[in-house]
Amino acid sequence: MNLLKAQSSFITDILSEHSPQNTLQLGLGNLDLTLLTCQTLNSINHATLTLITPTMMQHSTFSKELKKLKEDSLENLVELIRTPADEVLPDFYFQNCSLDLAIMNDCTQFDQALVSFYYIDKMLVSRGTIIMTDADTPVMRKLCRHLLTERGYTIEKSVESSKKGRKITRILRERFNKAPALFTDRIKPFLNTELLLTDEDLGLGCPMIAFTKPAEEGEIEMDFDSLLESIINE
Image (cartoon, rainbow, N blue to C red; front, side, top):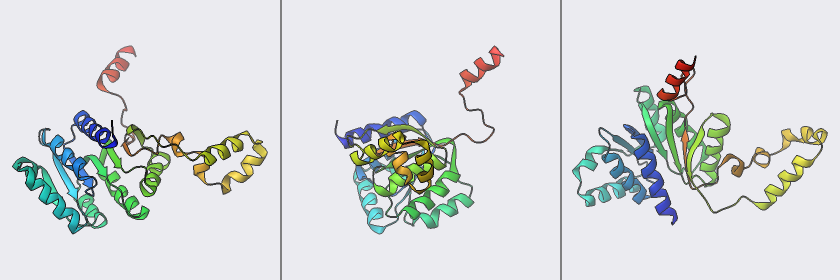
């Protein structure tokens, strides 16, 4: 299976499994995948998609392709916004918008990606899903590490990659782990954290990853059947 087919199957499976009502996509990304997202969401009752296209080129490209499909229902499904994410997402947040699922496409700069994620995270429901496309690019890879190591997100599913981490990184880490603790404890503060915990260790380095937001504080993190069984056994 080629990469596009794997990603198409990935998107369809995630959307069909979660049946999100309110979905936000940042950036046009791959046009075929975006149109597939629209068609899949269109089969879900009352689903909506907010698509933020920060450039005129992305906006016009998507509008033309949507019209070619000649499906009025898709045009009703999508709210197309041609405004930079850092300008429109704060407005959504202060309007108390809620998201069941978000899709983030590659950003050119890490600070832009981090600001976008900051607001998406605030609007995303407890245990909601965020899909990172182009997750193996430098900016998105760094953002994915932030989700896992700093924000408590977990990987739900990913499109596997045939790429392997750099051999030199693995060798250095193996030698470091074998060194005496007296030595390693002294130099740990000066080492790049990626040498101690690689992307492969975290399950990153994949072209597309779906993350699950942690449960809100005080929320019981189990399904109804498990909760019922727990009550009966008490």
